[in-house]
Image (cartoon, rainbow, N blue to C red):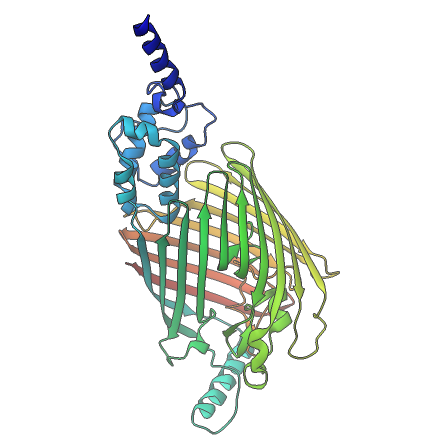
Length: 470
């Protein structure tokens, strides 16, 4: 009787233990489990190889034993994974920690493979050759002559030089510090200088960006707080720097929220939020830097909501709503206190394993010149971690000047008038990237762009760059 009682107590005690410890290692992981998509992506990125999966694409179920074995193999290569794949591996580790222990992979080992500090850097050498109208060439010559006189103290010209051949050196770095299993802090910096003059004001893009953020990644949500880059949708209406907070909720269907301020940063000729777009028009003033140094304190309140819905294995839908309000002015202008609202809709379709179609359209609540659209076709992916990988793309873009905040696709760096960026633009871009060996990437692109408000202003630009990662 006593022996029977002891056995019953033992069985009862075991029943109270977490079920995952005694999960059948040969039971199937449910077909709708999120882990399958992460496994497929890790395989595409070359992190999972030689595990007997073959060309696995989700067409069969995996047992918990198989899943743990795959995750253990991915963990051993975590140092070769990009940031997104590292997050996937960590998420898989947390989900299958008991199964990993069953095959002898300890928690201490998992943590040892994820370093506290992670540093990424890139040195880029960039070249752009402009082919512009004769009138534009004449204007550029005037600007350059006046700027040379300013350098010699003979004039107070405020428009920086504009060269038909731009050459610059860029340095980017990113530092991640892992606080615990869920929290990391990130610091990023972009710096660039011109070969021709050593002057940051001569460079097409804004010369310097710094971001810093606290990032949280939990099972059902993630967040980011600080100054960070935010790309809404596919970047048609907004790809800019925000001081605020970002929250992402959901696994397959995702809901994203942002709230904060777009602050002015120092660029060509003064302080502006960005090169072009509606917010850039709000703050841009060629005389701002000299006459109104307080412009650096200008800001616009910003809020955004975005929904991402996977329709099936090959198609995703995106929709977003954004609001922008200019709160502070150095001098009176028509933008102060007004609310600007933006709506957009986009989709991406995987036509096959390498070919993807992306399309997006958007508009603002202004009464005219308020529409934008882009259509892109992308083949392959140049992954700097994978030698001999490559990507090719082509796209058509049309942006009306009151349609967007700061677009990924804006040709404002190519088209310029009176020293200011052109907000209204349309044109084509074709390009290719190739990774000859790990951590080296070559990119070349051709842009045929026009000012959509004045088609006599055009630029046919050839761009080339070499990037070295360390």
